[in-house]
Length: 155
Image: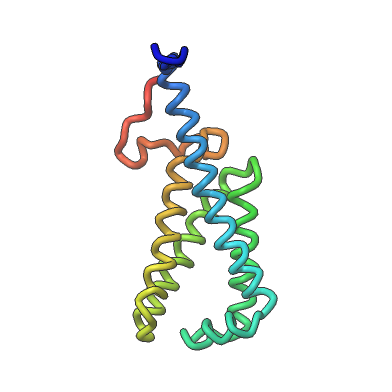
């Protein structure tokens, strides 16, 4: 070879380990984005940031509900982030999904811009991905992929 350079190819020794690592990275990326979007939005609601409150009031929500929704968003983002409490995580994922689809629905109902529908639905996809990719330690013992009609991996 010219100038002593060699190409070295390192085969994946353990394909399952590589898949597990990639799944772990995908889970944390999705979860981190969800926590950032939901948590920061929740703080803005709870702290009654004027522009944020004005937008939610335009959707027909009263201010007292906006503050409560903000507190729930912050608590939900904390719940999916911290270890343990799998039942609370299930409820948090469901609540966040309900919040996001409700936001998209409210935007459609009030004639909001297209991105007021697309943004929450895009985050809802991240929520679904985070939920589906979460490790066994963050699942209820009965919350297996069999519930979704899929076979669990035999590993």
